[in-house]
Length: 163
Image (cartoon, rainbow, N blue to C red; front, side, top):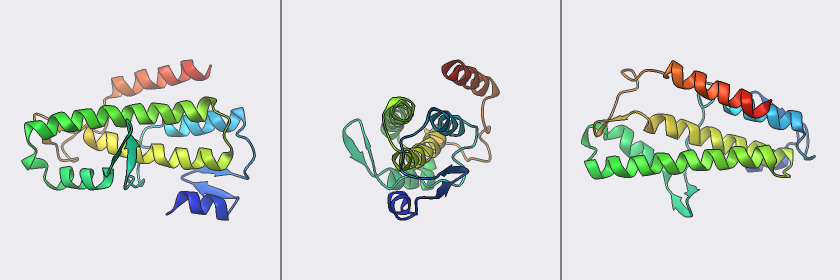
C-alpha cells in the first residue's frame, strides 16, 4: 500500500486503527493518540518493513537486508553481526526522530500518518534485529516475545512524557 498516494487521494484514511479526517494541522490529542499507538506492544504486527529508508544520511535497502538476515540466519558472520548492531542503532534513532517530529513539529494529519506508518515498519525491523544472539539470528519461535521489565520501563517512560 502506497501510504503517501492513499493519503493524498482519500482524505478519510485509516491505517491500523488511526483515523485522520483531513489535512488540517495535527491537534495535541491526535499527536498523543499517534504516539500512544506507536508505543504499544505489537504495534508493528502486520506492518511491512520499508523497501528503502534513509538512516544517518545513507539510503539502506532495509527490506532486502532483513530478507537476507532472516533467510540466512545460520550463516551470519561476526562482521555482519556488528553491522546489524549498527543498523539497529540507526533504526532506533530514526524511530525517535519520527516520534519527535510527530510530537513537536507543525505537520498536518496526512504527513503524520505517513510518518506513523514509516515508524511502524522500522519498529518491526528493529524487533527482528533484536533477535541477534551470539552471531546468529534466533528463530522467532525460540525468542521471547518481549522482556516484561523492559516493556514496563518503556510504558512508564511514555506516561511521564505525556503527563
